[in-house]
Length: 158
Image 1 (tube, rainbow, N blue to C red):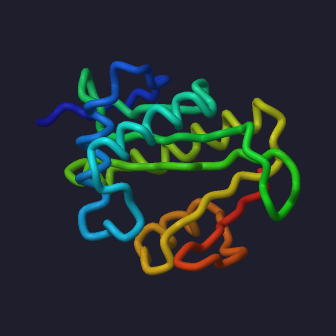
Image 2 (image 1 turned 180 degrees about the vertical axis):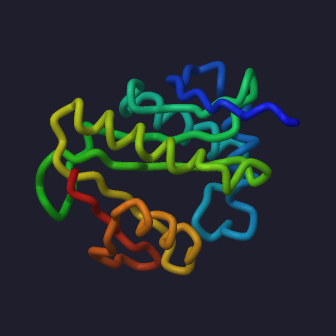
Image 3 (image 1 turned 180 degrees about the horizontal axis):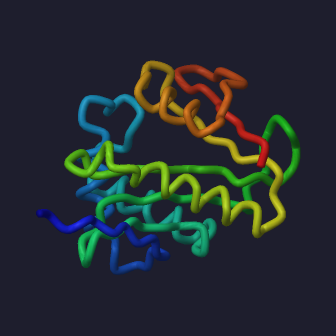
C-alpha cells in the first residue's frame, strides 16, 4: 500500500530559482509561443515575480521536492476594472505531477491570499490555444472576459 502524498504550500524565496527554471521549461513544452524560452529570460521573470508580490509567490512541495509554483500579485491594477486585483501571473506544475490536484491547491491559495489582501477579483491571462488550461480555470470558477492578441483574460469574483 503506497503512502498518500501530502502537498504543502509555502512561500518562494530566491533559492528556488533553479527549480523554477526547470519546472517552467517542462510546463511550457509545446506551448513555447506563450513562454520565455531563454534561461536568462526565465530567471529575470522569476526575479520580477518575487519583487512584485513576494508574499503571493508560492511553491507546492511533496516532501522536499518542489512540484509547482503560483505567482499571485495583489498590487496589480487591472486595466479593465481600474482597481487592484489578485493577478495570477504564473502557475506551473511539473508534468509528472499533474492531475493530482496540485494546480487547484495552488490557485485556491492564490485566491485565499487575494481575499486576505482585500481584493474582490482574481484575474489571469491564458494563451488562446491553451485549451487544457482554459478548461482548468473554468473548473475553478474563472470566466473568459477579454481577448488581446493571442491572450484570453479570465476573471473570477472572490
